[in-house]
View 1: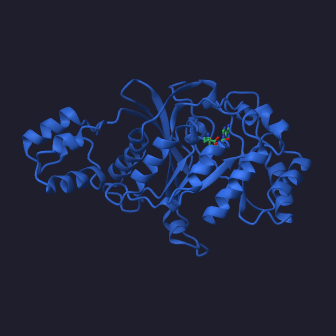
View 2 (view 1 turned 90 degrees about the vertical axis):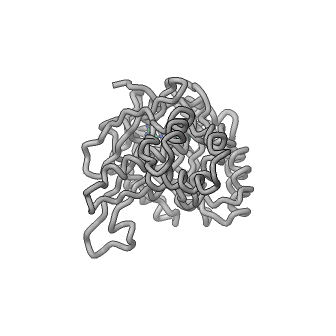
View 3 (view 1 turned 180 degrees about the vertical axis):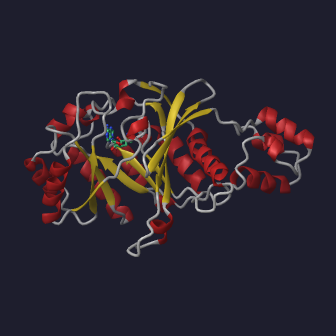
Length: 355
Ligand code: SAH
């Protein structure tokens, strides 16, 4: 897919063409201009030639009930990136609190870079190294891909939710090392004329690039911020996240507090639960201490196998760890994880057909 020539191709067309084309692209989710039936044939041919819509992707479907589907997309220059559709089924019980819980929820996890330069020791993406930044259009394309997929799938199946509800910038790469294209993608996804996804339904996760946190604090857009913390001291953090050599916890908290002052929004701290590395009772108390701030939330993430030397903490350890946070008044949740059977879970995206 490449829409960079779209304005040029439509330049000499009547004004209403833009609206027609936008509807085909962003409401009907066409993947070939031949489907744009009411456009003149000559225009369709030219669009097909200069603005191809096809997305070259291989899909892997997860077998588990609440499931994740993964797509490996090959970009125009041959780079491969991964994107995941996380589907939470609706609950039928009377205890559901919201419509979203009743009908289920589709979340798309997008990559912001091909590869990643951060080389966190627990994450598969870093192991293959960094290839390049993605363009905003390549980020948006990942969401559009799933929108097309859900639409095709929903044909004839009335009980399917065919909408994309949430977007998380938690795929391959560090969004804040590609800030300009990341924020351009957010604005584009938010655009009522395209995918129209509310900013509050989008979340970005950073390993703690303070410049990005500062820039986001100054944006008019209300996207959610998450910080990959994973350790409670700089020393421990440096052992698993080389980026901690550049950004200290003190600097990160300073940037986060400035973000909270400016935006009044909550910030989520992600904390991986890795057996014997960061999951002791002492770690829990230290984390509770660091997190005792009104707008801080903690998300504990059971570690997913990523081909390295680490293992997840046991369920019991995670529960005990969370209990310490609860007892100290820290708001904490445990992340549900799907898709590890197809290497689609957090930290397992490699960007190549590895298996
Ligand atoms: N670079 C960004 C965003 C991508 S990672 C960041 O670091 O936040 C999205 C989340 O998945 C991060 O919290 C990351 O630390 C976590 N993650 C990485 N490897 C993982 C693994 N093997 N299991 C579970 N989560 C992992």
